[in-house]
Image (cartoon, rainbow, N blue to C red; front, side):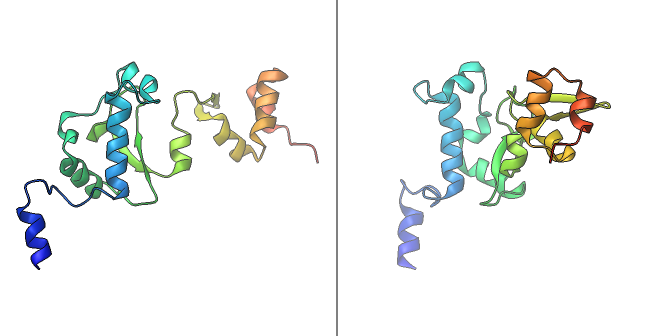
Length: 152
């Protein structure tokens, strides 16, 4: 009881979440966008990716995260990688979804659907390297690359 009273009445005590995974996600998100010495700055702040003003306050970010599906097994993902971190453009996803939402992914269109090379490889039951080699090295059409069974 006394311990909680001391925390609540200490002007330096803010939220008690400093050592949580969510707090570290928030810190790293801000550093990528705001700190030119951060190694990822060139891919984020250096190309105009920003954090919305309300998320400069951790408790505001925490409230959004908890109301939008945050769990310790998920990562923050920007839906449109050319836009910043703000509520309408962010979601919590697993690593598989996030890895298929990168700006440098190899996108392939087949029968009107656009998917990453990795996603098509799963659908076609082919190794990614096989599909890549068929398309880029051998110059096969997308249809031939996706529909030709792999050798046994």
